[in-house]
Length: 184
Length: 291
Image 1 (cartoon, one colour):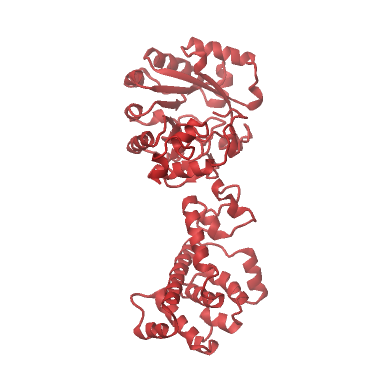
Image 2 (cartoon, chains in turn purple, red; image 1 turned 60 degrees about the vertical axis):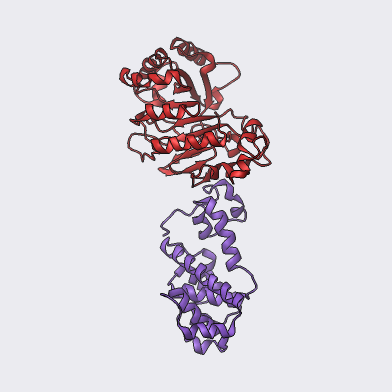
């Protein structure tokens, strides 16, 4: 049960009607709708950081799912298990990112293992990531990638805490997919 | 943001421009509180003695009036709840009226001689008290508004008039009771308000709006956003499209007509309101006559 009312279309502020035009916009929008002026800037920001960009979808989903697992966000792990599978991550890779399997065994590429170590260090902290982890990233990623991926971790952590602490519920479609694919 | 509001006072994109063009009311409404000594059947805010008070506070109201005057608002409205339950209301309203003309809504049941004495300075200020009176008979009136309401109103209004304070009477009825010609009851109500010292031009009749307790009771007319005059309304919970917007239904604040949660600076909701008005022609809200 969510800690807050998740606003339906007739309950939501009129200025956000477009977000409800295609039906249920999901719990993050339905929660942010309580504060329209923040929803209007937060949602484009989330779209820009989490959506398609110069960094590929597979890489982004590694970051998002791993951060969510490290932060113990049930809502985000559920949602991004489905998205990660759609982004062509294998079942073993998804299990490893969720903390249910060995990362080294599931991910053959050095580049992706370095990224996962970076995500673990950035998401949980505290303080500066270990020098070896940072050096491995610097060897394999351009500055622009490092900036974008680190911002992606931070943004995901923000959403992890938002969804966890407000107890946002997993959507019905996501729940059906998880059940059908044996993730429950 | 301030440049958009301040630099081109006659542009439709400014508050003054929107007001001058009739696209937005020049009155800023302030919900002083939500609690009330009555529990009227059609109350938009489910006001009653024990409800959460949602106080705006005198200092906040003064600050809002300062900002309103700077931004180009032309008047202030104070509503509730019953604003006269607030101990400092006489002084707060006097301070608001030093900035802009003020209308204060009241159920007129609290006007003891002692309170009216404290209101006497209002006689020299641009202050109007708008009181609710729905029916010309105590039985019919009090069925909707509570025991002894009628008697208290007819005793209280003359005290205000005698103190030199302008009084308006607002009558709230079902839409199908409001026609081009007054009913016999409405004629009797007009005879009554004239006898109380309230002129015809200070009597308004408007329909019950189906929100809050009226919705729960199945009363009133359904009003969409475009049926309501754009009148920025600030409460303890945010800024809303109209004073008919920040209603309470089933104990929960309705935010379907919320403009912004933040009201500081007042420029923020004003800018958002002007944005919503872009492309909206004047007169959208006149069909139902909701004022």
